[in-house]
Image 1 (cartoon, rainbow, N blue to C red):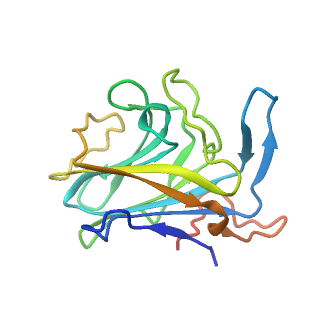
Image 2 (cartoon, rainbow, N blue to C red):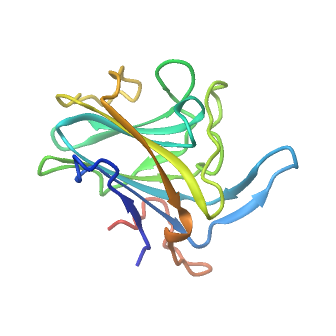
Length: 199
């Protein structure tokens, strides 16, 4: 059973939640001394929100300008779009180099958007956009994240580069990743592409 860390950061909307879990097989490696320590292996995220929100986001790092950002909005009445973006000046831009996957458990059911995400390269900055790239997840311990949302009618768009309005609400939070691990045995095939620890 996955050990999932979940936060509902906005007391006015308890159905807005963010979750994370990380396989125990993930490893930490040290790049050359001028670089920060980086890990390897996938991380899993789950974002949920009512469809009264036009979009929601989760960002890695202390601020939007230097972050890897996951943005989720309605693609249709039953599906969602995941748009990985890099921070910088102005609106975060879609980053096609981000190695992220929207898992099968994602969609819209009973007025709730759900995005279950596997990220292969969240231990460091996503490449390609020189103005973007966060500090990554880091190995264990407390890590800084931020969240935001905009209220409004569903976008109903599968365009990962869709123009978005300014957030209505935003905030920051800290996750202790030691509370977000799930055990995977050596040689276990649980981490095959498409597996979903939230199910």
